[in-house]
Length: 227
Ligand code: HEM
Image (cartoon, protein in one colour):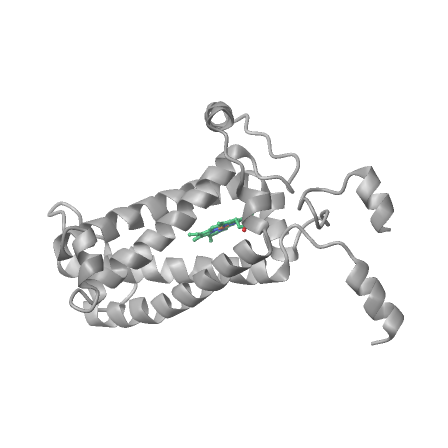
């Protein structure tokens, strides 16, 4: 590659979803689906709620031991990929730029708009208050899910952690409830993405170019100075 080409490539503004974010997001999406499907099969083996069994059509694994192998394999990918996402988000300032601040008044107003199917998402480069809450919320849920999973997996080695969940059964219940929260997020998240398909395209292609400082669409001034 010539110097001029390298320089001009370097000068190009970043995209809304840089390549690492897209790769980590889609790895996470597949991994979570594997973890949920296999988790449901493991749950069926010893249910918490007598009335709740997941049908064979929606679970992953022929028998519980088989599902456990899927669950543990996906667990490593989920953990390493999640750690990489957290480090990337903190070090590059993406979390600060994209997910903060959260103002309760805005969140309430936008939830009402969303219920009236009037949620605006004209500018893909700025997450609205509902998205911010959902994304930060699911990040926290994923961390709690991992911790409760560790507490069930190794209750002796991580006994302090297990005690935080009031013991093995408490950790099992918490693991189930965090899973339910993640599934709920996923349903809302996928519905919102399908309602605004441009967001889905952007999560594949990278989306529009953004101002490196603000992470939002370049203003006419920043666009001129970077060209
Ligand atoms: C197949 C399922 C999924 C689809 C179709 C999907 C789609 C998308 C799309 C289109 C965006 C960009 C939203 C925008 O620009 O307005 C996005 C962002 C995001 N998604 Fe998903 N997603 C899926 C699964 C998941 C899962 C399982 C999680 C976590 C448990 C997740 C967490 C996130 C987060 C945290 C962001 C914000 C990323 C950032 O900007 O750093 N997604 N998703």
